[in-house]
Length: 270
Image (cartoon, one colour):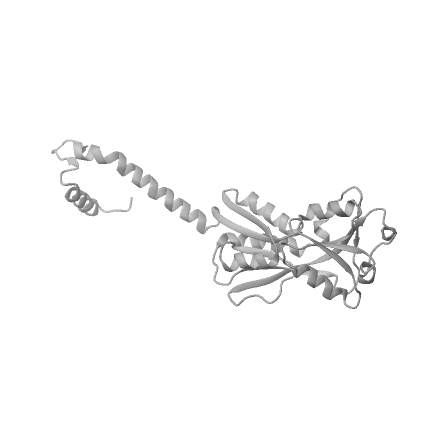
């Protein structure tokens, strides 16, 4: 065990002083045996050593990013594509990690990150980051228009911003967060457009499109084929949206580094 005999004897002596009696029967020529005091504390001592060993193993696993917990936030529409693939690889390689996933608006994601209830966020429509956060552009996400498959525009291969001005658009309001709406409005430029805001899920918004209540804008990687809905790419200036990863600048969580490296790998081939 790498411990000298005198060191063991000194440790036993300190324990016997602590417990107020001998722990071992000492008879010349006879094997060592526990006294009644020794037998009384032996089970608890074994349990204590087992607990310490378990804690050491868990600490090592956490340091090597094999266990622990990680809270990940992402903007609506990014559940597919590089983020999905990165999380899938992370789950396969780190099955014992407690993974918590949060979907929300850019403003809410930043708030949660700054409050340290999220370890890392993946968001679109990101402006200048806070000094306390690290920010990295991972990929550019093309935008597409979802509209009812009977609409005359479905005869086109793609749409431009001027085409969108002729469509009744619908967008999510994210509980009052208008970041996405303002971004689209700025990219429409001189083209006025009609837009209704709905505080519904992305799936519900696509269903409204299927019913013919309007068109909506989505990320290309978020497209899931649905009967009655056609998806056309926007081919015009400023038709891509940058997707950024953001995390606390002073963070040293190895799990966060592991997830980011996997998402970064898939983003490079996106």
